[in-house]
Image 1 (cartoon, rainbow, N blue to C red):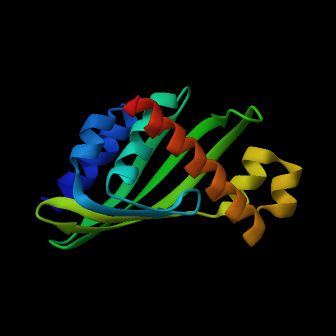
Image 2 (cartoon, helix red, strand yellow):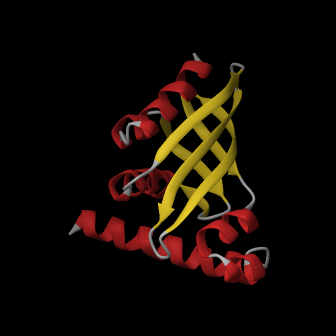
Length: 155
């Protein structure tokens, strides 16, 4: 069941089907990644809706899906053009999951933020992408975009 849930989640992501993705998440979901930091509940769900809605040339490929009754993992690659710079990105991500009540309750995505910054931003990303300053600024930017997206859905 859990392996099928992970597969359902990434198949939906590859089709930009955020409704199905969000349906895989428990209401008390906790999501963490290097770009957004920690998101909980509706904010975590809204992030996937925003990413799917704003995707232009996103291609998702997933593999190595494994799961037990309570935990799981997968590898996924996201290739896209970073809008701010027009630079191509291939982000290689490892995901860890915990399950509760047949849903994903904890989702941790891990990737090399410095490598991502180098691809997405170029020379400045190479210089700054590994710093805590960069990570803090990125969290501010991504969460600011998420706040605006959520606010636009309410109004």
